[in-house]
Image 1 (cartoon, chains in turn green, purple):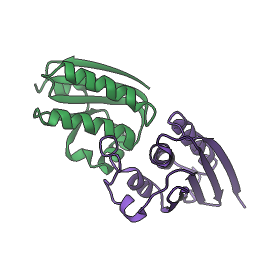
Image 2 (cartoon, helix red, strand yellow; image 1 turned 90 degrees about the vertical axis):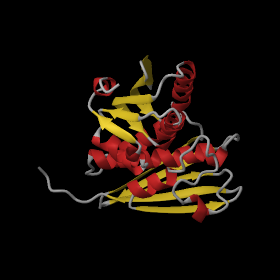
Image 3 (cartoon, each protein chain N blue to C red; image 1 turned 180 degrees about the horizontal axis):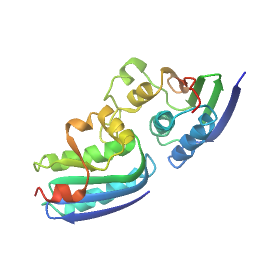
Image 4 (cartoon, rainbow over the protein chains, first blue to last red; image 1 turned 120 degrees about the vertical axis):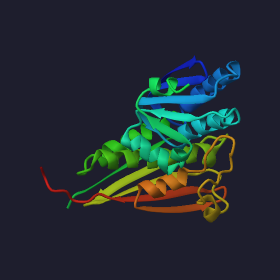
Length: 112
Length: 143
């Protein structure tokens, strides 16, 4: 699994490529935590999941954990280009209630 | 009669989670199965094997055994570890329940139940846990 994390203004944008599961999530979790710790102004988490080929509850746990951190800052959670299967997994985990499915990161950045 | 089976034995480590779901998905693909059904199976197997690694073995080492079989339209997947076991299966099946709240969502069994048609759990403390999952693959019209 490969990922890229960028901070633009108050948004942290994480682009994921590959499978996010029990084995790959610790590295992603550490990178997200570090980025949030060093950018205390970040409120919104934007996950570009267009090229994310697999996610299970281990991966969702990492995302939910980081969301809880920005929730205290009044932040929001966005998923960019989630496939129908990805949306189904997110809905089953109840994450559709705390997030928005959007078509592009620009859409989120333009709201700021 | 269409019938086949496989058995896998591998160390219960996180690096083998993706291997396990890929192998079972390849096996299931021998059936007339949709991509959505394959994704369901991959999630269910990933959750079951992750549970073996995280809860079954925790800091200790041990093997995971997967037996997958199908007969006509019935696909059965058994995932077994020989680790710590589950003290209370009913409580463990509650959505959101986890013994590791800092790291886990407690959704593993919920996902398995949702993505498969049947889920049966057998466990004994310090003996191990066996999860039996069944998915019916409906016959489809060609073309």
